[in-house]
Length: 408
Image (cartoon, rainbow, N blue to C red; front, side, top):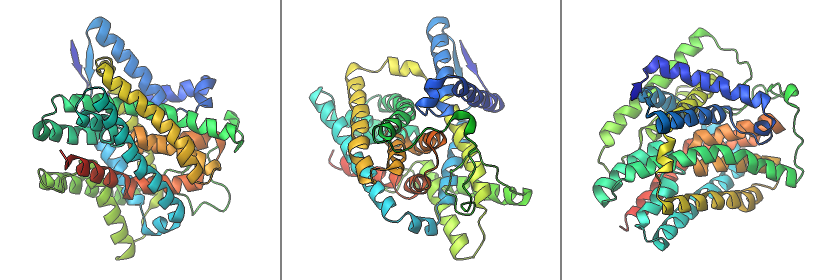
């Protein structure tokens, strides 16, 4: 028996998932200790309930995918609209080093996936599916490249394998970032945990005008109706342009997933308005809409997880994905943390890298928000991670994937 939930029902359930996650984190010390994001906690509970209903009562629920897609595009638009060239310069050397770590791991990730697939007697392109296509790229990239692999390279079931791998990555990426950061923070005595009842999420004195995108998500931000309308117009333009470019680029050499076009449009729009027309961009409104979109998107994504796809994964693919998890944990602990300075900021950035490596940009930002909510602010992490997601990671991933496929 299949039930279809419309757009408003999907949004209501997503909000309930977020409230459930917040409620459980407030009452379960383990979840707070390991910095698991609220959408991940509530979403996994909902996904487990859906799994039980599917297995024991043969019931399934389909949610309105358009709602999830809209909030995903809004989130990526907010990253682009926050990506000022001025802030890019502030990122400086730290952004460059972090980018090198992320880019190098994309290569490592594909090397792990493709080599293990070959050793296990599978087509190496299946290892690419269980590599950066799904784990760095997420569900959007999995769908886009899965279709190409099926139609042009003869990999049957590439979309299903991609969605299952991306589902695994979304879960693990949201779960492992906090524990990795906690391990580094405790091992090297980098910070003390802030008591739960003392976390006010307010900006330190003197930093009110120098807050990075997605930093202090619970802070009250004063915006007017005029600012909100103008910002919504910018979001709408980004999404409209992204859909238009997706149609134009279909089947062309420059074909990219819609969310990448939304992000790129946001970057261009922000910097043209700011640097050419000298328009004062309302960062506070972008931040509010961006944080809200991030939470709702993750909640719907996890609410929509079909965990029975993971149960149907072939044993060989499970081996590859487990190896990918171990590889990312080791890389962030022994490479990312060390190259980023071996300090508290480096530990928070390692949690962000776990999000990039297994669950894409939304998971990376959710991870660093969860860690800093527990241990205190990391301005560098909130400056570097959104910029890396805005300017580079998806483009690098697309170039690497295209380069590998050119040999097949």
